[in-house]
Length: 365
Image 1 (cartoon, rainbow, N blue to C red):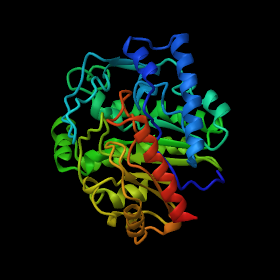
Image 2 (image 1 turned 30 degrees about the vertical axis):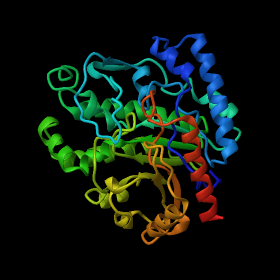
Image 3 (image 1 turned 90 degrees about the vertical axis):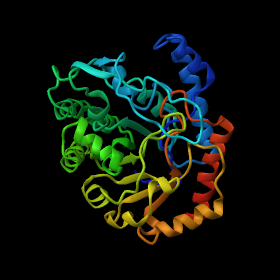
Image 4 (image 1 turned 180 degrees about the vertical axis):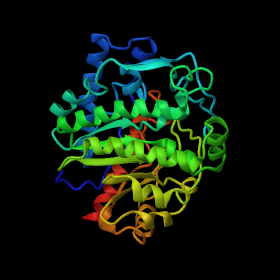
């Protein structure tokens, strides 16, 4: 990919009300919903071009959440089950439920995960575009339940193996289709940096967090390897949860930075750096030379606008650890990791994107 991407974003945007209404009414694939999605994707592409983003997405409008491309394409999930999770927020809005299902049988893939998304996006982007996928590492922690999933997958690592194979095939298909920017969304790495979640991994997953981290890194690298071709940008996005402006994990990257940055075979790290919840920039010293760090300095959770001068100051601080030419800017997460979206209006969302573009142009031009 020849284009330099300074003004980036994570992928999801707030769904239009008509799509939300249709999905809440149980519509999950009718011609009516498909037409609504087509119109919404065309509109969101136009808006991104108008604001000057360097890479475009379809807003993930055809999904019920950022993992929806996989769960809709694969049989074996029971959505009546769920693993409890405590969400934190500065707002009182409840988290969306259910977010995911529990695996109750051997997974069986019905179709390609993004085959219904890529052709339309490719035909209508008229510029560099990205396609996002959930990390395979997401699912053992949220979809494997002791006593429920065990008959099909005795251990969480068994489930990880099968989902890794699914994501590998999809990554290879995206690369073959010429998608210029492929991003894996991997919030589950936050489990390895937050002490309370590291303990959860020991007690609930029955494993040493450091060994589980090695397993996760190997799984994601297998997927990136399947898509590695000249001209394709490979990226990973790390956050600490994103559900209706809520999060579940806290802590800097310090505990995993050296191993994670040094191991993952990606071109870009999209990193949450919204506030003190994400720690300092110091762990960025472990990012290998030549790789890009996309600083997620602008909140997609809260509507208050950041100060441009302060953003530039923080970029300069990060440049002490990663050269300025290897930095970029984005919101810290998507605006709608779940289809109900975060607690802000579309106007506020687009103001945030406008700030990303304006700040990036000031810093890098």
